[in-house]
Amino acid sequence: MSLEQWQIERRRQFGRAQDFRMTNAGDEPVFSEFLVTNPSSRRTYLVRIRGTEPGANVCSCPDFASNELGTCKHVEFVIGRLARGRKTAKLLREGFEPP
Image 1: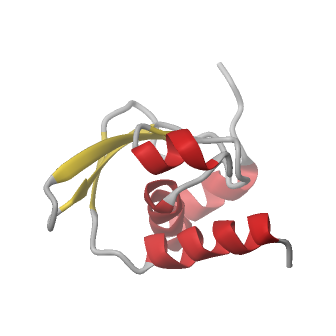
Image 2: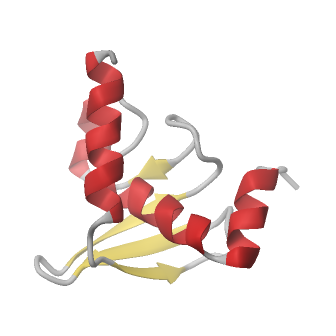
Image 3: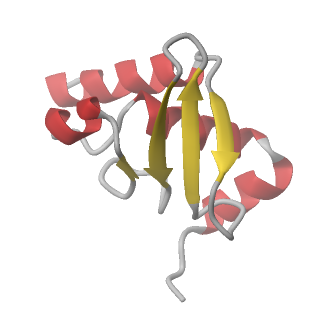
């Protein structure tokens, strides 16, 4: 496993284990904008989901802006939550189709 892949997996594992709060701030159930709040720090970040692969999504957190991995714990948290829902998991697998 490359160092880059290891860093991505760390963020995936850590993000999916968090007790963040997620609010869909957009119009679509999956490929949308989500507000992700850490109840401990009370910080909220905007996450835009467009796919499951690193680089497809965007987060407003400092880690995403600086790590050059195309993901962060907030993105991975949202993808993990969406992947657990029956309807949202199906939509996530089908992929993003721009309007």
